[in-house]
Length: 330
Image 1 (cartoon, rainbow, N blue to C red):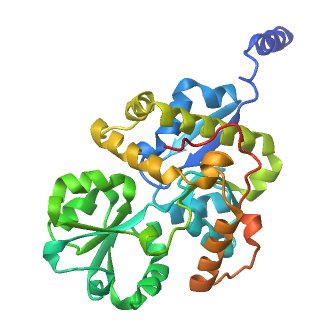
Image 2 (cartoon, rainbow, N blue to C red; image 1 turned 180 degrees about the horizontal axis):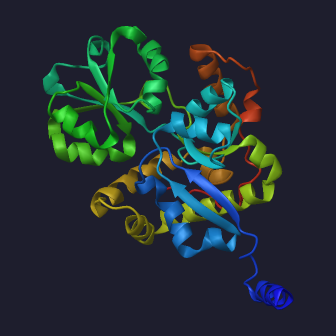
Image 3 (tube, one colour; image 1 turned 180 degrees about the vertical axis):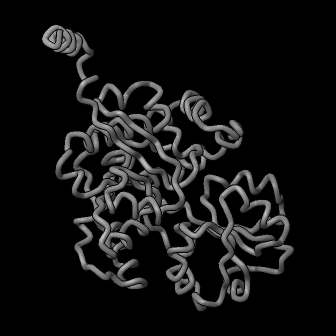
C-alpha cells in the first residue's frame, strides 16, 4: 500500500506543471502603504509575469524606507523598496543590501505648509512642528535638509503622524508642516488651494535617488537568477504602466481597498516625472548613474557618517536591468 501511494505521488509530480515544483518564494516589503507607485508590482503579479519567471511573490505593506531597509538588510525580507539615501545610511550601520533598480530617478521629497500659518519658507521652520511617521525618509534625512537651508537640525519638533493623517493634521493645525512625496501633490492642491505652499528638496540642491528596489546582499549572491528575473519583470511592468496606467491601477485597486482612482491617476502622472532623467531615458529604465550615486553616498557620509565604511560602488548595480527597456522621454 505504501509503495502504491509513493508511486501515485511520483506520478502526480511528473504531471505537475513545469515550474510549479520549484517556484522561489520572494517577499517584497514596500516602503509604505500601496499606492500608484506600487501599481506595477500588482499589475505584473495579476498578469502572471512573476509566476512565469518562477517567482511566488508576496507583497507586504511597509512602514517607511528606514524599516524596509532594515528588513532587507537583516534578511527578513528578500527584496524591498527604499529611498536610496536611507538604504546607504542603513548599509553604513551594517545592513546587507544592494540597490538593483532606481524607481525614482529624482527625489520625491518635499515639505508642505499653509501660507496662512505665517511660514514663508525653511527659515521660518524653527520652533514649528513637522508631522510625519517615524520611519519617513524625510525625517531620517532631515539633518541634511536643515544644513542645506542653514537652520539648526534640532530647532523643530517632530510629531508622529500616519500617512493617512498628514492632510487632516495640517488642516486642523495639529502640525505646522508635513513631508510627503511629490506624487501626492494634486491631492493637497485640491484640499488647500492657494493657501498651500510647497518646497521640493530637489529645488534646493538635494536630489538623491528616491525609491529604489533593494535586495539582501547574501540573497543576491545565492539567487542571482531570481534577482535578475524579479528586476526585469518589475522593469517591464513599469514600462507597461507608463504606456497605459489603466490596467495597472485596476490591478492595484483589486488588491488594495480605500483608494480613489482619480487620485491614483494624478499620482501616476507625477511619478512619471520622477522616473525620468538622462540615464533612465538612454541607458535603461531604472538605471543608476555612477556619479549621482557617489554624490548621494558623500552626502550620507558627510551628514551622518558611516559606522561601517564601504565603497559607493558596492551599494548598487545595473547588471540585472534589461537595457532594451528605456523610460520615455516625455
